[in-house]
Image 1 (cartoon, rainbow, N blue to C red):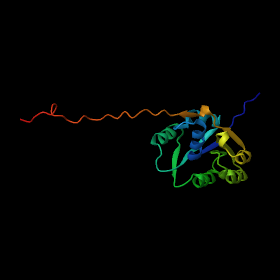
Image 2 (image 1 turned 90 degrees about the vertical axis):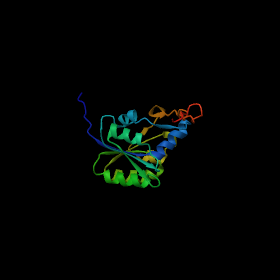
Image 3 (image 1 turned 45 degrees about the horizontal axis):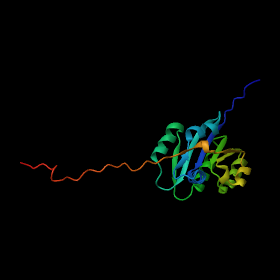
Image 4 (image 1 turned 60 degrees about the vertical axis):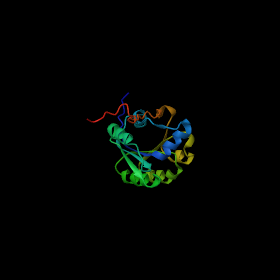
Length: 178
């Protein structure tokens, strides 16, 4: 039997707020995040990664996450003024003529029309999300659904504040100047 070589170019677009909320609701932990080290290779299988963009609402975005995504996947983080819906949709539309497949990491039903449009342009569209928080309409519209499982996220353990404080000088340890 001959082996089939798959040469698809894939863009992964992540609605960070949606995925973070989904993981937090499933894990019942205060701090959880995706384990990109294992999740992205699993989604890509033997396909090539063209682009990875993490969209996130808010001004406070971890610089460590940005560094990690860049180091592992030449990925980038795009801060959004409000939700990621519009910036992610614009980026997907821009990339539709440059890639074979777009993976949207979100369970938000707001992306149903985008998925429909991208498919009409000849792009394969896959959804990666936590199944219990994903719109069934979105799953049905996509070409493929990748469930994000508990094995795909990390629980972050926060340590207690170990801040050191300087002792105030006392009369005993203050030297007199002569």
